[in-house]
Image 1 (cartoon, one colour):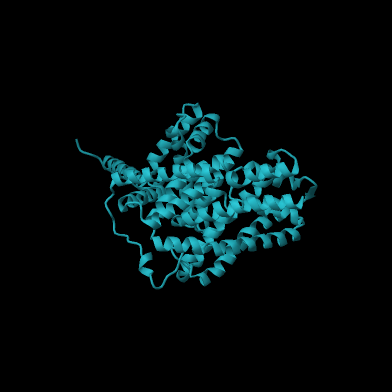
Image 2 (cartoon, one colour):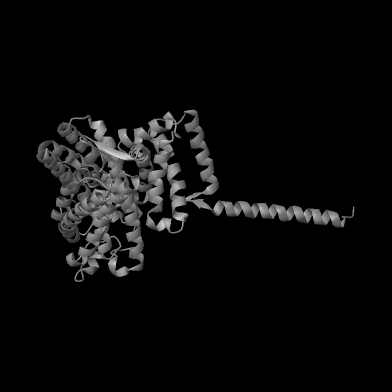
Length: 464
């Protein structure tokens, strides 16, 4: 039977449509959300959402990871695609703040929140990541540079903190705050070392000295810490962007500048085979350091994470750890820093960033405490918080060359003093792509925060 011209045209159209559809699906498979093809990501997200919505999400670490990993692939991808915003810490800001906003509007059901709570707080995923980052990076660093950085960073930290206090007091006065309120209820919470290490001890101390319940002071102190942390993330992102343009200011993750020993800073990018047995040994070493820090805390009453850092530095400098175990610990650090930091930030945003406290301060329009109730606009409040963080970063940037340090890295490390403890360190260093600075950031946060809490408590007791 002879084929008509219409039949030929119809079959050609079908073939073209089939080729077009095949090409569309081929292109769709090439599109990725992070490392996952978009079609597969949509399927996985649908499964996780359905399980969470129906209350069938497993209440264990697997369920918790399913939630935070799904969110992090989406939010980090969005943050990396927005022009300009991606260069000033956009992915870190989205991963922290979007989950906090979703929690504030009650868009997560109880099953989801309980599952993430188990992972983040009961299993303490935060401390696991911080221990891996701190110990792994310390054991993988050059020992001379490690000690030089630890010693030199105290100068910009002290000068930067003093400058931040003075600047905050002056700006607070211009915005209508008393010096007392500006110092104890805005500046101190920002540089106090975070929620767990700063705000909670401060609230107990203020309660003992001023008389009201600790919860009252937590609600007044937490907003400053959160707003200060947001400024610190933006600041780190801007510094990272500046470092791309000014190579002379950028150590690319190296804190100390040394013309004589520049080869010590050279990064060897040659691929090395992964030895999972060494990684297992390295993970065991990291766990041991964390536990030893906790044991010594019972004896000397210094926070365990601080002791963990000091013990790791001592072991690195005295060369008591076999080189193979150092390599294993550093391999764990590289895995955690590249794969688990962003998911951690999702969990932090859901459980550790009290957005309701910030909204309460801004919506009410005043900040009150015993003996003082004054009307202040939220714009002035934000300005004071910003002045504290920016002045600290600026003065560290300016004095770093005199200490033979890279200005970008010195400023970022000092800025971590105004972050939300370990939470803030992760977010700030992620925004600036400087996770190798974690040991120095932890020193700035832990020791700087503890000194601030003790000093503020003693000063308030003396004033009263």
